[in-house]
Image (cartoon, rainbow, N blue to C red; front, side, top):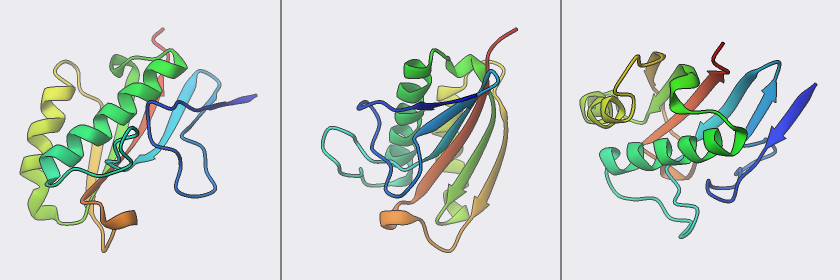
Length: 126
């Protein structure tokens, strides 16, 4: 059985999808754009945008009863792969121990002109 997860502490979906879905002890978090849920705006620069996307993920994890230690896989989408190092610096500060598996891609464009979007999968600790 699936459970829809939603929190006002992360931005609302910009399309017909859920912020996250939990099924069978696994949490699937939709790609998080770097939108501040309070102001509905995006910060400037890939570092600040990465930080905001990760804050949004943390809020969804918390709402669902998970922690960042439960994250097993992330997918990072970058508007420009040259921003990989800057994104990685912020990402490493967020996942300081036992970081999840991850892949990063450059894409042609991201919604709303974002520089980064991060999708996450978490599994309840056994």
